[in-house]
Length: 369
Ligand SMILES: *Cc1c(COP(=O)(O)O)cnc(C)c1O
Image 1 (cartoon, rainbow, N blue to C red):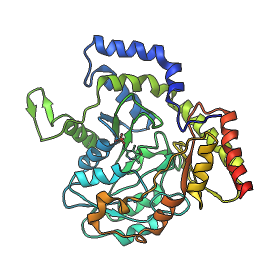
Image 2 (cartoon, rainbow, N blue to C red):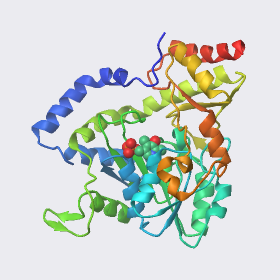
Image 3 (cartoon, protein in one colour):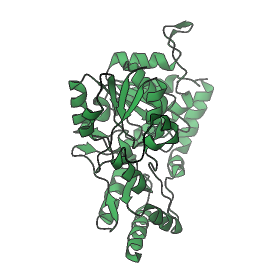
Image 4 (tube, helix red, strand yellow):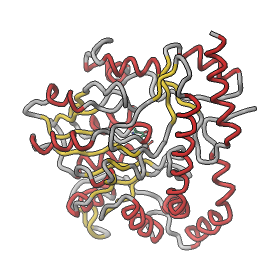
């Protein structure tokens, strides 16, 4: 049997005639940039996220960058975040001229550990960017409480966490804003690049909308210098077709996650990732921790099972950030995670047969050892 890491074709097949219809409609209406599908998608995505505003943009990296700028974070400010994430989190902070301040992560969840916030605080600290890794919300209650005490902004990198809840409240309602990615492999994926900023603040939403389109107020009038970070009409149409299915896809991901959890609960040599109390994950990735990751990974490959690594090099040890002067041992929990994480196949259409096969392959290897 072959088990792919993700299977985007399965989802496309179910929606292909509807996709053909909206794509033809966008072309017919010449609605290539912005347009009616974008307006509709923004309205519906805001409602899906339980917030008053969503602004569609070019991708998840730009969404985080514009969300930070929209919240007034900029050059000279320090922004606290996690080293256990995709490089885009740090890029977005660096691109606005702010300083990245890493803190180590919680050994159970891999998300930033609020206990470490205090040690990173300086007079220049302006914002915290929690990443809800694998779709599992960070401890937003502790993070937002700390932010309130010290008058910091909280902007979530929710690229992996469409629809996630913390203490029953959607991620977008915690803090000042949240950024989302619609990269094809994310829980809600476009057929290309796209992203969005969500917020309950009309000021932040208006600023992000200005920034994404050259600071434009009218056709020939530019209030501020902005960027070209617009979402294109074809992506908005694709996302509009997919959004009504997202809740059901998420339920399927969550149910696969439960099934993996129970099949792997007593597998020796494997540690399961936990949710913080109060966190409802949207199960973007199913990642386990194991000491002998490379051996386990090649065993699974030999059984036809594709796996992923999210992420094998913590950001503070990335060559791109070497000028920050970090060394091995600076963030030991994040470093241990980078060495031990292994992501197993997970997508809504994953079958029970495939899932049991993956779990059996993991158990089989442990018996062999
Ligand atoms: C995917 C991802 C991003 C970047 O999104 P793009 O749409 O690819 O720019 C940022 N942060 C995290 C945590 C991600 O997983």
